[in-house]
Image 1 (spheres, one colour):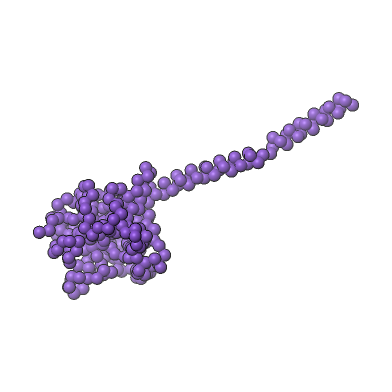
Image 2 (cartoon, rainbow, N blue to C red; image 1 turned 180 degrees about the vertical axis):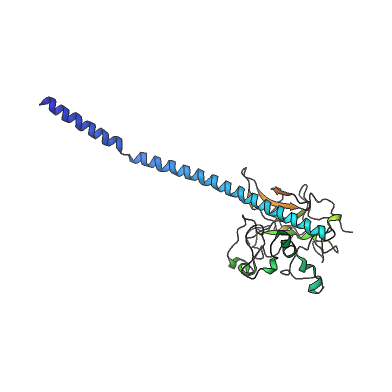
Amino acid sequence: MAEAKGQVNGKGARAAGGARRGGFTLIELLAVIALVGVLLAVSAGAWGRARAAAQGAACRENLRLWGSAFHLYAAEHAGRFPHTDDWTRADKSGLPRSESPHDHCWVDVLPPYMGMKAWRDHGEGQRPERNPWQCPAAKWAADSAYGYKRSKEGGFSYAMNSYLSYDFDHGGHKGGEPYLNTLRCEAPARTILLFDQAANPADGLHPQYKNRKAGKYPGEDVTALTVRHRRGDGREGANFLFIDGHVQFRDDVWVRQHSDVPEDAGDLEWFPYRYE
């Protein structure tokens, strides 16, 4: 009997031990949950970095495509680039529309070189919002944040450097030509042609107030410049297309201060050639 009882007790002990090995304690469950959370956080961070890198690469490719179209246009127009502004900005040239520089804006005359329709040929509410028109990293706000009907009129996440066209007094320089003469440009590898401009009214060089016209115009000055891209090393900056056609990420141009006439940042230029 004693032996049988011992066998029963031994068998029961083994059963109990087996039950303990098959379950989890509260501490073990908490440890697993914490580990899963860490893995999810790591994977989310890696995904975010990969997504940002892909958006930055797509943005630079967009700018290269526009750069090729600019030079194709110049080859057929005596070395001149098109105008910076379309009819969304007041025309101060004093010319009839058929002769106005604003009727020869880059967003209207360049797309045919890329197999696309001109911006003005897209109806209201149907403005293009994908590559190569828009930077994939641009974040648009709700319509109520803007001083224009952005969802109907569309918006531009890229802006042509307004200092390239002077058909009216602007930026402290008087006179000039309405179209950029690339043959006169003194430093095409350093002079900005297109750049990432603020799409959200809360971004840009005016932190003290919201720019409700953000993204409205296809041509802008330095005050529309925005930081949009983050590199894997943590640097934040913008992408630039230069007159010679090359594209570059820069993180040394962003300065949160208002300046109608920008100072050149290192090897960057905003003005294409000197005015007498």
